[in-house]
Image (cartoon, rainbow over the protein chains, first blue to last red):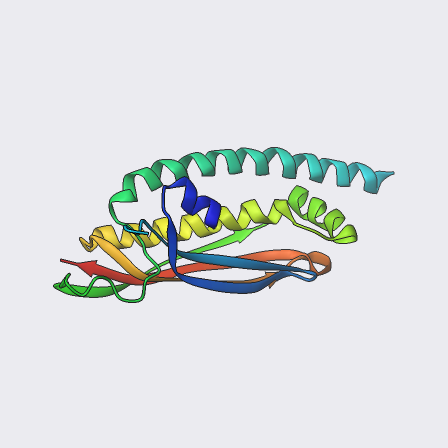
Length: 42
Length: 147
């Protein structure tokens, strides 16, 4: 997620959420998402 | 011997058609993402309070995906040693981006300029053979901001 944010030129990610789901027996998915923003004055 | 041939045919079909569908789907996703970039979907709960929407509306986008035989086979092998299941990762990535696109298309039809409070939900709705991934539903939902 951080890599994607960096790729679009953001310097912060706000309101990060995590979601976990079991997609198959023995395999779980961890998913993080948030809003990429450019904060000024940091 | 007969079983082995059937397995190889299934794997070849899964790989061939699965790969073709994936390449085509990613191309369509990238094109539509570029078109819908004008409607940002943000995870922030409340947008800037200085912006006053005329109306807000719940928008959703749902996708159900199923895994192909080749991906399932590769994931089965991966299960032996553990680690990242890349074959499923691309599948879920496609589903998620497609869900966001469908949500944004709904927002566009309503004349929205923004979707806020975006959330995702993933659920396994059918179980595949031998406890493998069957079908997975990915739902993206948020509030369309109409000004």
